[in-house]
Image (cartoon, rainbow, N blue to C red; front, top):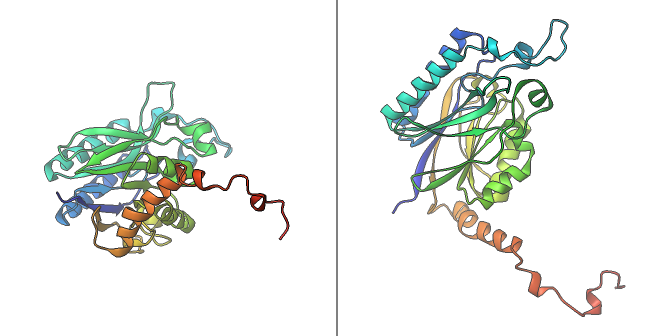
Length: 297
């Protein structure tokens, strides 16, 4: 049985004002257009940025009249439009037979603040899972969101996916945990205009020998565009760095004939697991004075 999945990673325009109904609808329309393009390219799953429908700016939602930080008033958000756009995205995913992962804010029961989330919609058009951002920035946790509590693993066509959001790139334990959970690919969606974060994403592909989807907003792509990292850390595909909506498309192939990918997936990753599991314990010299690190030359 083939163990292959074609992944599309999008860079779409992310609006930062959840009260702007027109901007939210435009974001939803752009997402759906890229979904059609992804399906036309043969993708089975498409990934969008953090807050693809909206990533609320702290300057819009958590700033007082004198410029000070204040708790966000989430009653101002156009929740009805957010729900309508999410439902339209899900309906199209079912029509296209395309798994779709996109960011938005997820409301909780007041007075609890919402989650900053990634929705996972199946190829039947059903929301089947949600990843809630666990590690939040100081401003996010102080004034904007409730943190999530657990990792998420979803299997599509035999390929196991993990999920992470933005600042979580700075927490290596998140990505090490997904390696222990035996994922084949981590989808990292961000809302940041910062080239080093892409290098960190490459590093996780190198350290853990899995694929990684890196999705950024189109408006930040001139710094670093969206793309797909192969096990071992090289970029397999990247969007144009021109500030426009686009897709990067590549295959996740667990039996890839690519020598570098095969070495990473079938040799390096199992070896590192065995090394962490006590491979060296019985080979440590015992009772040899020359093994004492305090000895002279």
